[in-house]
Length: 409
Image (cartoon, rainbow, N blue to C red; front, side):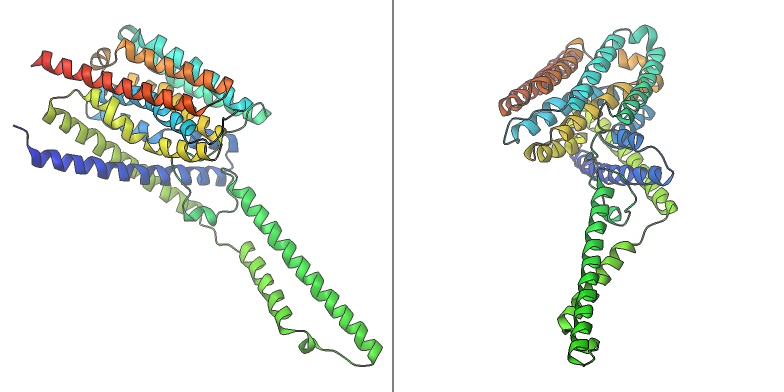
């Protein structure tokens, strides 16, 4: 008989883990970018490692492996790879008011994803014989990806992924005018220039009025002091001066402050990874379900909620570049670095039967479908079709798990 108290507790802990996951991802990504900028790291590298990078997924995978739940980690990689395209990118198309034409950079990113996904599927077929070597190869492929795309961005061949990823910038972003992430510095600089122009204009106006008053006094034989200038004009000039001074003297946190918040975000990610993997393992035992099934369905849907929200907002604003960076960057991170770490540190015996051939086919089909849509342009009906396919995929997973459960009983 199921222990309902234990079930409710683990469901609550799972939901709490999701909140901790989002908090940790927000802190980690924001302050990683700020620390990297303070240390003079290339902006292209910052963009690649913060926009679309699934650090929270990597932490969940490491936590699962540490608890001997490699099948849960594999299920999360498979489910998230499919959910990022069929469940997230599709929502961007559905909420887009007009057809979306994707730029050259988006097409290049999708081509890279198709190549790396094909490599992942090819190597997964030889997991039993060359598991560790495959892990090394996938981690190396991630390094090559970061290096090659960073070089292409530096040369102007492609544009960096826009950092509208897993988190919104916190209040500290407003204070760090020297941070170049997602155009933040540009907006602050423009604000400073605008305030400077107003300040200079008001000073010029004040000098002009003073000169005119002096000239008038000379002509009439009277001196005119500052008190004769209208009070509203003096207040206006003083207010503009204070505003300009306020913009230029915004307080900035130290590098140590950002490092501390980076470590706080990493600690929160680690805690959330433990909570999510442990609670799902317990629920799998209570309901006699496989951890691979829970990883493909519940865990992958939950951990990709930020990607789905980003897709909705970027689609409604016709920001195709963000949609592509969001889904493509996440999937490249999953099928290279995350899968590589799993194959290196995970239990290969558990991984052998943890992924089905048709599931690999769905991952490859998603990459092909995304590539085709980006090449020809996105339409709303395409998004609806993708959502129907995603619902069908989940239904097949549920039916398959149900049949396996009956056979085992």
